[in-house]
Image (cartoon, rainbow, N blue to C red; front, side, top):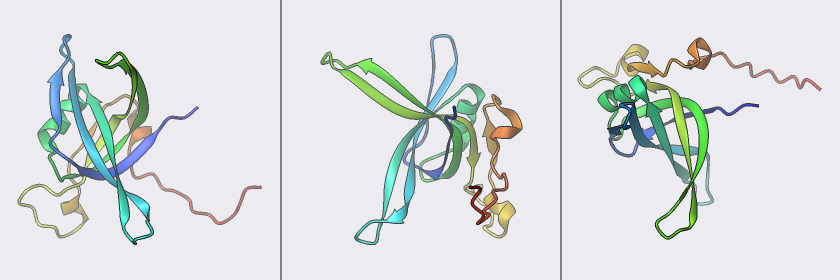
Length: 145
């Protein structure tokens, strides 16, 4: 089975950093991600996707990301349920990030070449090299069946 999500979008607000009772850092933010296709009015619709990060990755995201910054997130979808104040069962869906790449250039750097556009990256360290971005994708036109 596979549960993997890769997103590129802009933060809708600064990450919110908090700590659990046991001292684990948790950062949450929302990514605005444009859909691939345009609607009937010729506009791209945008999805606002909640993201959560933990531990050192949470602290790095809190320090280096801000509203409007471009980021790539690699992680998994997590669905949780809880009981609301009205007694009704509610569901929430979020992306648990295992790797985050900061794609906006650093403040004060020139927007010249590719190196100027590549910001720092952070990894949760839970899946090593297999979780990094930049893998070559074969777009062969041959259908295997």
